[in-house]
Image 1: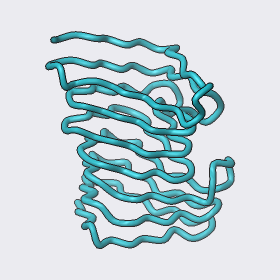
Image 2: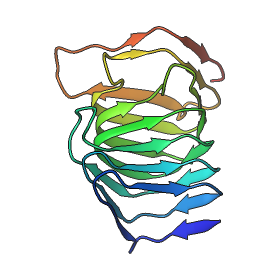
Image 3: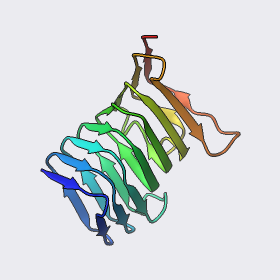
Image 4: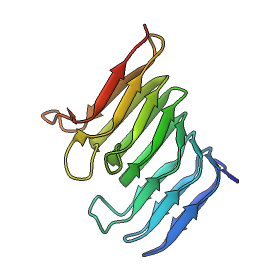
Length: 167
C-alpha cells in the first residue's frame, strides 16, 4: 500500500512501466509519462488530486491507466492519454481536466456518481466520443455529471447505460 503525497514527482521514461498493484492513495503530485511508457494503478485507488502528463494523445505517446477500482475525490489534471477501466466511484466533488480521457476503458467501466462530477476534456474515448459503459447518478441534487467537450461543436454519445435516481 502506498500514499502519493502532493510533493510527489514521478517520471516514467520511454517504454517504462510504473505499476501500483496494491491500494494507492493519490493526494496529488506530478507524474510525467514519456512516449511508450505507462503509469498503471491496478489496486484500489483513491484519486484526490494530481497532475498526470503524457507525451500527447497518439497511441504511442504514453498513457496513465486506472484498472483497479478507483474512488475520485478531487481535482485532477490528465494531460495527454488516460483511461479508466473497471469500477469508478465519485464520492466527493471532483473535476477532471483532460485531453483524451477514455472514461469507459474498453467498454466495461461502471461509474457510480454520488457527488458533483465535472469532466472537461477534448475526448472521452480513444477513437470517438462514445461512452459504452454504465453511469449511475444517484442521491441528492448536488450529485450530477457535467461533461464538457473542448470543441463547442462536438458532442458525446451514450452507447451504454445511464441510470438516474434520487432527487
